[in-house]
Image (tube, rainbow over all chains, first blue to last red; front, side, top):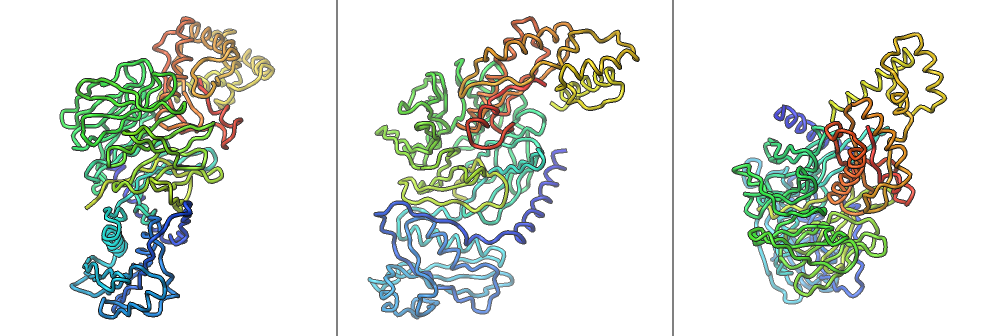
Length: 436
Length: 165
């Protein structure tokens, strides 16, 4: 039965891709709004890559430009303002680019290297220094042009900022559509820019709480398909899946341990919601919390020895830290009467959460060292923060009118954008780890 | 869920069939008392030995109970209907399902817990009235199944609820 539904979801995935290809207006409509006025974005020109007669459906240079702009750290120079389209470092007249105010220039060319494989060689040039700072080659098939573009973006971003690029990562998220009071829930995976959406699971019953495995090959999630909530894990390549829990009451909030061997989750089989650990090898459950309050939304600290979770044991939902070995708990947040759904940045220090401020729900960041809380978002029903693996941006769910959409904000709140969405209510984004 | 839903659907069907001899709509549970008087007239044409007053009463009481934000305390206005359901379940035991819900504010997994807490509050009340706990199944949908749409106080108030099914 599991095999059958996996198969049908793959078929659906194919159908969906086709539909998207037909209906999608393209991702150039991405709305990017830089909100912090004193930002000094780096000016960069990405010259169109010389295609050498290769017919590709994707405009690699345009994808690179969009990636860099979306990071908020770059301003790109319009193609129509460019005086020339150099395809290699030796073709560049630096003066042309200085006139346009470009600090950096990307020049590249494509060539066919073997049957079905194509290579892009690109250079990153420092305009004022008049020198090449990076030359790199990436290759792939014609169907991998978006992957190549995101790889190029990663290299450029890292070279200039010193921070590893996260353009080649993915997002998992849930959509819900309602037609005549009948719901369809879908779990999808797409590129970090929202493109190439693929269906992972479709159900008439709710799907919730997608969580990536540390290696980026699997998702855990909650599905109500059996009539009650249960936790599943699913391999994204083979679509094979396995039901992990089937207790009465809540089966929720799965979170993989950094080493991938355990899963923290929530069960209420003993009367009220408690955090448990599931050993994925032995299938043994061990209970970590013991309190009559709500304990939920566990997330791992990078050391694999502590969890952060939400509890209302103090009267309102707040973030707590749990030592797995000693089971000792410590309250971390005190500012505000609703702090929930912790999501830790890879630095192990910056904690994103849902924070209620005078009846609106924002995403806030909380510095575990200094205790400083900063509100990152301005809309009023923001939830489900998930931090990119490089710690530069976080994605969250919010509302535009009555519709759920995904939005992103940088951890310094300087840049913000809304992801274009195909249809329905979009919610519960989960940012993948680095995938290569 | 399917099984119990089908069961309660069936019992409603059976009841409706007995009462009217023809209707097959489980939504009959929502009928007003005047309708039930009308239909009970028709029941005279069939064997009515299985029908008593309390059975008829279960179809009239409210089946949705509302809560305050981030709270799982029963409201005084829910009492009368819950007492009626409790009495009916004791005299006429059947499996029921309590579905707990939350409004869209706050986080989804926390709202799952909140929905369960609300459904448990209703269950505890009924068990205190003498209903066998084994008859009551509790499930939370958190904020995943809104009853009213829109992001405003009115919609939120309608969504913070427990439904007896």
